[in-house]
Structures are given as structure tokens and as C-alpha cells.
Image (cartoon, rainbow, N blue to C red):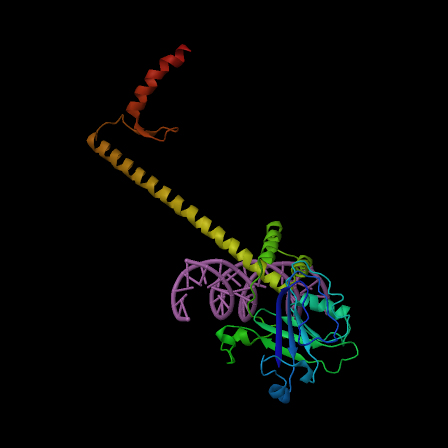
Length: 299
DNA sequence: CCTTTCGTTGGCGTTACGTCA
DNA sequence: CCTGACGTAACGCCAACGAAA
């Protein structure tokens, strides 16, 4: 098996060793990832490679090459028409199930076999030309670099779980564009009805479930933030109340001390000024009242 | 009308992955 | 390179709700 790779080309470039007569697919995107897979038989392994360069000699490979196009992320869904319209062989990776569903309706088998992807584990399919259906093969490429996927069966339950379509549940980091778009939607409405969910999923090239989960987590984050704010507020409020309590306790002690110093003064009672909330004796209040009364009478 | 069943949805706690210091 | 902290996608479970039987 021989792999060729080109990254970052506007249009997936033909790989030198595999094209002689195959028509090239054109993908109208600004970033492409094109990988070619050339199958070698055992004899090819030994003889098909140039001893000097180590490169595959195409003439010696009996099986036609396969070209893989990793389509770039497209936050605004575009139709996949023309993708399968040309004869030849190829692989398509990096389209969500939303697109997959669309493809299933747009493209009739045998041009379409199956594809899906997630970040770490790529599950893709080979399609061939309209008249060359019988050889459809599905490959699974695992490009994970984490230790979980180095061949051993994982003990983590979810790693082994796969949805019925073979799409891994493995965590996929959303792009900045996707997150920003979801964030904007969340500002408008923090819950989604099914129609909005599907619309967002389609626009962002995500599964509806992903959109749903994102909103759930986003609501949880909002709530957590709000809880933190509330907690801070309550802390400050608690501090204020504690200080107020101390002040009142001091005042009470002063009053008790005052009462102790003048134990037999029947004319002395406690009143509170409603404006300043200071406690004073009625003797003082009476004096104040006496001072203000003549003025009121005069007026 | 009630009651039951079923599907959907949101909340919540948790797990595990990706990133960064 | 390794490690721990942190953010977050994804999961499972449960409760609430509405529609249908």
C-alpha cells in the first residue's frame, strides 16, 4: 500500500504516481487535503518500488489507485452536488451525517456507499464510478494519536460505543467558527425547538445531537456562572449583615451601660430617630421637641 | 373526562479528551 | 517530555411534559 499526501491546496492536486488517465475531481473550497492510496500486491512490494527513490512505480501496480479527499470544514453547508458525478474512484471524508443524509437522497447507490467521520477515527468508504459498483469497500482509518487507540481494547465504555452508523462518539472539538455561531444563537434563544436545532446542525455541519448537547452544556455554564455571581453577592451581603450586627451589638452594650448608670430615671425611655436610626433617650428628645415647639406655634 | 404508556426534552452529575502552563 | 489544572464535548440517568391510546 502506498500513500501520497498533499495539504493545503485549493484544489486537490493530482498525485504524481497515480494519475495517468483518471479525471480529476474539483472541489470548490479554499483548503483541501488530498491523499492517494495505491494498492500493491506482494510482488509490488518487492519489485514495484524504485530502488533509488523508494517511490512506487505505478506501472507495476495492478490495482487502480484510490484518491481520498478530506473536505475542509464548511460552517455554512453547501450542497454536495458534483461530488459523485464523475466516474472514477475516490474517498470522501469529513462530511457530517447531515450531509450524509442529504447525499443518501441526492445520490443513488452505487455511486454512494458510505462515509462519516470524527476527528480521531475516520470511517470512510470507497466509491467507484457509476458502472463500477461491485467493488465497493469500506475502510476504517484510525488516525488517533492518543494512547487509547493504539490497538488495545479500551476499558472506557464510551470509547467502545459507536452509534449505529458507525460514527464514533469520541469527543470532537468544535471549531471557533462553529462555537461563535452557536454562541450567537444562544444569545437569541437559550433553548432550541426541533426546527432550530436541525437548522443549526445543517448550517454548522454538525449532528443535531451535537447542537443539542452544546446548548445543554451552554445552559449549564450560564447557570454555573450565575451561581458564582449569586454566591459573591451573598458573600458581600453576609459581610454587610455581619458588620451591621456588630454595630447593633455595640450600640446595645452602650445602651445597657447607660441604663446601668441611670437606673432610676422613670422619665427616660428609649426612642429611635426614624431618619438616622439612632437611638436616643426621651429626655433628650423632649429637650429637642421643646426647642422646636415654639417655632411651630409661631408659624 | 381519567389513566396509562410512550417519546421527547432539559437538568444534572459525571467522565474523558484536548489544551495549556 | 511529563504532569496537573482547566474547559468542554459527550454520556447516562431522571423528571417533567405532552400526545396518543
